[in-house]
Image (cartoon, rainbow, N blue to C red; front, side, top):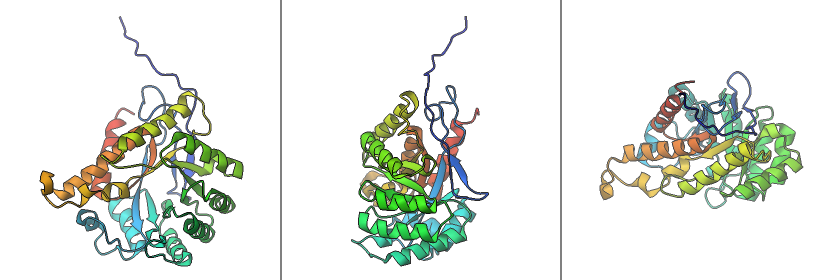
Length: 315
């Protein structure tokens, strides 16, 4: 006799949204079931990967992470183009680390100029990420939004402490808001409500739940993202029915394991270790529901793309 496999009924759906503009714009979201549960629902848009570009030469990267970008780390435009041309980047994430008041503290005008140059030089969607300093991010991201009007950037992290000013600017210049909360489903929902009350349209909001790398709280991050998806799909919580973005690359490559030398503490080859650390972390977050992954090493990205292919081979 035939065996009927029980299936979970889903009453909700993740909103579909478009990131970027033009022929290379990407669509994310639209799921009607848990991530890759293709036997229960639809996943019309597979996860997208954005490659990191820094606005100034990174000084604290592990050698293995620097190697693929040798010769371009002092030029964000050339770096972004290399990611697209050589590594097939679907999106670019410009990390504005130089604006950190506790670091170089570059002026907002300089950071915005760099963002504008990168935006004008590429034809794929651009994410512009600040430093989570409310005052400086407000100053920087508002100017970036103005200079890049019409490009539909993804601006982040937008937190409760700065959501009014950055959110209002994003509305005015039609950019997507990366709503960032500290690994808590209730805080994520609360921020989405605040941004909605401010007037941010549903199609311009993506959730940044805050993530962590393997061995550094990844399990907790996974469970929070999982609960967000459960509430969105099975509890019809329309305040959580948004795509998820995971800024995972920098979290993995800042760990001590990524910086230890070959065979130090009997941990094997440093390059392979760092790549696997990022690839495994990104894969886990993808399985938790991440629609956009911000990653660093091309080899780690290649592994994640392979996993996406394996998980959807029967599509």
